[in-house]
Image (cartoon, rainbow, N blue to C red):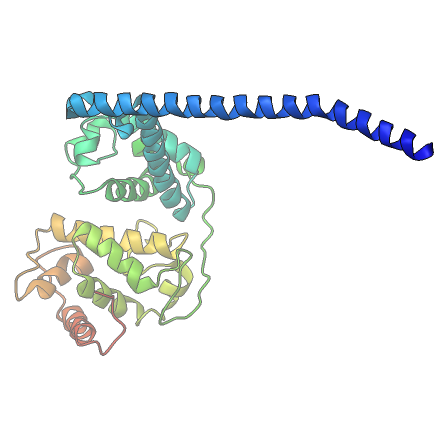
Length: 311
């Protein structure tokens, strides 16, 4: 009796499962068919698009380059402006200048670096000084000259030493006397070479003069004042906040002397002729001893008997 009841219960369970199984199978078939239809529709759509593209190919004028879309143009302009701002800030910090105020002056003088004239000559000066200014080959070169000039002549830019300079402290941190490593990770020779290339100065000549003026970079003037070229100002020997600032000031000073006194550096007597303006501030009074020592160092540098700027 018990066995019969068990069989009846089992039959009922089987009978009840049959509709459920049929429902699951039916739903599964609809899903499969629906997916096939969707795939067919998508394939048909792709085919239509491919047919449209191949039947009427787009011309260059019909294609809008991604880089020319407004969003990306604005992003590119913003990135470029930030890079220019950072260049001004970098060099302002080397001269211990207030970076915010220096950047503000640069923006005002160049219409935020958008002025057409500025983007041709990279000159950053008030209008009354523009006629006497010389064009530069790059934005960075223009910024370097501007920062050095505002450091020396703040009144020219409508400010004062007290307003534009953060401090007159001199950084004298050194790693090796013969191969000074600066914050940028460059040696003194690499940094000097970079500036010489930027402003069209003979690298071996610049280093030779620096060697003579500083006892191969061992003098107190070099070590304690970051003065590479025996530079003098109204108050005597000049000092610079950082070694980078000293190198910049030296290269620009050398360039200015060569140009102001019209020294033909291709002449066989160029160093002797340069000695007059460099040492005495006149072409009429040359300094043979200076010329002899500079020529000696220049020859040694070019023969690589002394530390030299990498070519």
